[in-house]
Structure formats: C-alpha cells, structure tokens
Length: 329
Image (cartoon, rainbow, N blue to C red; front, side, top):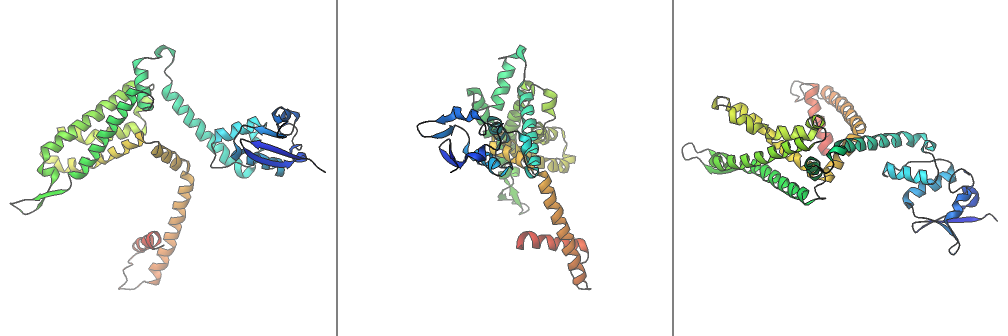
C-alpha cells in the first residue's frame, strides 16, 4: 500500500501521498532534504511556515499547477516559494500577471520608502535625519508623537472652524437676513485660522528642510496638498475688497486640509494604494457604465420622443438614466 506523508505546518496538519511529493525531486519536499524536518516522535514533517500559503504549494504537487492568492502579500508568498525550492516562473498564466504586477508595486513602494529615508553615512544621527524620522515614524519617538498629535489637533480644529463659520448665528436687524458665524465673529475666526495656518506652514517648511530629496518632496502629492491648504490665507492677505469675490472662491481650497489626515492614517494610505492598484478595473467599470448610460438614454429619448416629452435630447435622457441606475438599481 502506498505510504501517506503527514506534514505539520505551524500546527495545521496536511496529508498527501508520498508519490505526490516525489513528482518534483528538485524541490524541498520532493528531495531527501525534507528528512531534516522529520520528527521521529510524532512521525511527521514539521515546518514553522505559513499554513495559508502552504495550501497553494501542496496543491502544486498534487495538480502540477501553481496559483497565486491575490489577498496574500507578494513578498511572503515569494519567501515561501523560495523556502520550498519552487521557482515563481512555475506560476500558471492566469496568476502570473497578477503576481508580477503586485511584485512591481511592492518593489516601487520599497524604492520610494528607501529613497525617502536614505541620508548617507555623513548625515547619520543628524538633527535633520532625526526630524525626518520623527515625521515619517511618529510612534517611534517622543518627538514624533508630539508632532503627530499637535498636527492632528490643528487639522481637526481648522476643519471644524471652516464648518462652523458657515452656520447662521443671528439675524441682521437692518435687513433681516441671516448672518453666519464667520461674519459675526470675523476677528476670532481670523485669529484661529492664522494660528492654524502658521502651524501648517512651520510643519511644511520643517518637512521640506528635513526631506532627503527636497525636490522630490516638493513635487509629491502631500506637499502640494500642504501648499494648497494654506494658499487661500496668504492670498487673502494681499487681496483688496474689490476682488473679494475671487477670494471667496479661493477659500474653497481650505477643504484640502482634510486630506492632511491621510498622512496620519495608515488605513487611508492603504486605501490610496488600493485605488491606485485598481485603476484598470475602475476604468473598465466606468467604461461599462458609460456604455449602459448611452444605450438606455438613447432608447428613452426615441421611445418618449414627443412635443411634451421632458427628454429634449439624449444628454437630458442620460441624466435620468444615471439617476435610475445609481439610486433605483
């Protein structure tokens, strides 16, 4: 009778035929090297590895097809393959493209992080390096935590003040019109905004000073958001009352301060990376929606076409189609 091999991977038990493992003699499980991990007492092979990834590895021995779990970290998966002596080019065509795409994203992210933290030996332990490390790893040092919570506090205050100043606080005795809190308490809100902008400006200049590659940092998305968030305030200092309308329009850019929270949230950064990696899928979804909207808008226009019809054109019918598809299903 054929022998059954028992494999213990971090407490998870797998069993398979001996001949299944012998199919690939140049791998760890298919060669005599596996004997090094054999436990005579329990009569099983023990590996202190990831049992979730091992399922895919064992299925490779069983079926001859290697697949890549899309929800798994590509570095972890590649480490497991290397440990068991399996080459990544054994991946099936259906998974190879996803594997290489994730590997490229992981590599690009690593290069970005490495490039942002590489100061060189001459600047080791310098104040500039310590300051950058505190900004990028706020929970690792006391200075980083202070900067983290102070910045987060002023971001929250600024966003809340931007909201509260639009709330109606009273009624004008002369005209009877509603007066917003921003107009009634203009001076306190201006002082509060000045304090917040001052903190944001100091933070941005400190980051620019501490950045290993200042040119690259200045062109980064977060740096641009920092500048746009304080730009309305500084422009307002130089604008006259004759262009107050333009200044009011520019004040809408203050809402960009809310994006500064993404620097303080790992979850938001992960969401950003996820959206970036799903651009092609989201593009296909948008293309499919556009086709459906054009199709049904055209049908509605020609079906309801009459002098009293509200669908005066295909674009007018498209709005009805969009609302129907997105709200009513």
